[in-house]
Each structure stands twice: as C-alpha cells, then as structure tokens.
Amino acid sequence: MNPRPIAAKPLANYELEIKFTNDEIRIFDMKPHLDFGFFAELKNLNYFNQAQVSDGTLSWPNEQDICPDTLYLESRPAS
Image 1 (spheres, rainbow, N blue to C red):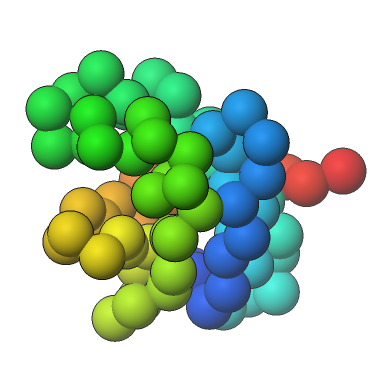
Image 2 (spheres, rainbow, N blue to C red; image 1 turned 180 degrees about the vertical axis):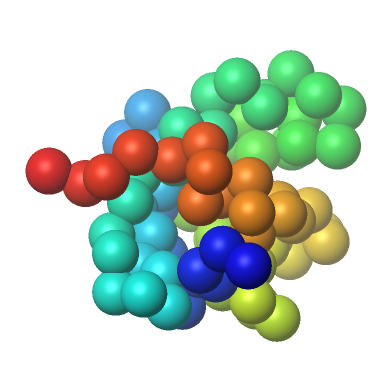
C-alpha cells in the first residue's frame, strides 16, 4: 500500500504540495485532470485552494476527491 496524504497545501499553477504518512513531501500537478467533468469546478482557483485532506485522501467541498495512490504515484518529490 502506498503512503496516504496527511497534509496538503495548494500552490500556484494548479499544483499541490502534499505530505504523506512516510514523511515524504511531494508535488502533484492537477492540470492534466482539470478537463474531466468531475474536476472542471477546480479551474476556479478560489475553489481549488479549498483542498483539504480527508479520510486519507485529498478532497474539495463538493465531494471531488483523488485516489491516494494516484496522488502518490503521479506526484514528484518536492525539491
């Protein structure tokens, strides 16, 4: 099982800095996902910035969420 998010901070350009249960800090780029209907609302930066960790993954108020495995496997280490 991959590590799970424990904290997240929205960054510029639709990226998220995520701290995982293994203490890694990684950057997830949300841009490739914004054209999918489910995530289109996230194009509004004010809404995007409401990202929070909930139930072991990242979510937004209107119930958009991302698989925690996707968050880990598709992110890059923070420098």
